[in-house]
Image 1: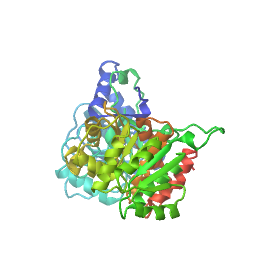
Image 2 (image 1 turned 135 degrees about the vertical axis):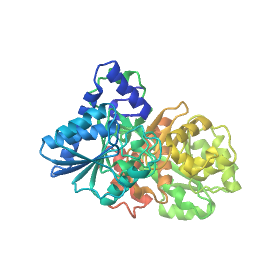
Image 3 (image 1 turned 180 degrees about the vertical axis):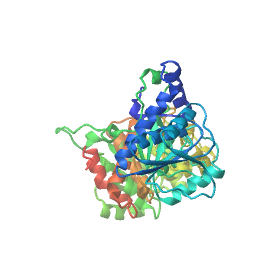
Image 4 (image 1 turned 45 degrees about the vertical axis):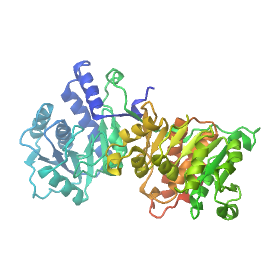
Length: 495
């Protein structure tokens, strides 16, 4: 599937191939691409910090440093005061020409020292390391990054914040915390997951007027979700009834955990499922009926009693509050055998990890990193080290659509396609938000979306609702705060 440039995510190697195609086959000189990058970045800087009068450039020896030097030359031409701190006495390749241009424009360059104070500046321009960084940042460069972060000065990162892995979004030691990042040529996938959002700040794409032909032979690695995924459902016609919009059966809520399955069920209702039944412990039914009578709560104490509910359901969501006892295992086995579309979350994933089995078609798995680690027989650090690889490995192993939750949730299909969500905020790191996501995806499946579209749109709606609910005060948000913005979003209103 072709992805437009604004939403195509690439690895560092793929971006280098686009660069080389533009230079070697389309005849665009490397120094010209560097000038275009500097021009775009300087325009972004002036738009964001129009009152800035003093710039500090941080320049490595390669092309990233060259971008910074040419930006500095433009700033000097505009009458700004510019100083540069370089990691090396000389630059390489096209960056050497850029460094000479900066010096010719009147720029001063000092060599980076571990204990030197930073000169005064309104904005710091980060051109230390580009997308080729694969090692941990150490020595003078690490000390310089730490001083910049401690200074609390505004920072514009060129292409990628120095210290951030362009492919995985993982910090490689000390990493620049930028207020904004201008990504050149194409989006680097690491800007949108793991530590990417924390380090990149506001993200901007500058394709440098590179012709489409340079991109044609390089397939994007993943897709960045766009606003279309928050509007997955057509307006409803009038001649319908509740059965038109599907029947979600939400299974879970072992003793003491009724809240989780209630959140999943209510999320399914708020996102438009026509009917939602709850299969839970009998001791939970009275409280569920009192709190949310629209949910049809049924006390189920053994798997055989689940059969009539499964027969009536069009989609099954299982896991929130399910627990890991024999009761939960029995209900999971029955759900897996029912032949209905499934959304599997929480303890259902943990039970699946204990006794791996072949899953039916059309399953959506929604693990957080800990659950993903158990499903792959790995550990959280390994999952987080490359979230794209982990999501794809899960999708292949279980032949399912996977949502690897976290900062920059990653969706993957068994054949390898992947997508990343650019929305969401730290306020969503609270109990119950994952249960809400389970209900959202199940509701979309019930209303006719396939597993992939339901997963991507469910994640997009959930994250956008979280952003609307959080506003400027994400701390203290609770899962139930997502319901009202979810209802607005599925009806086509983002406000």
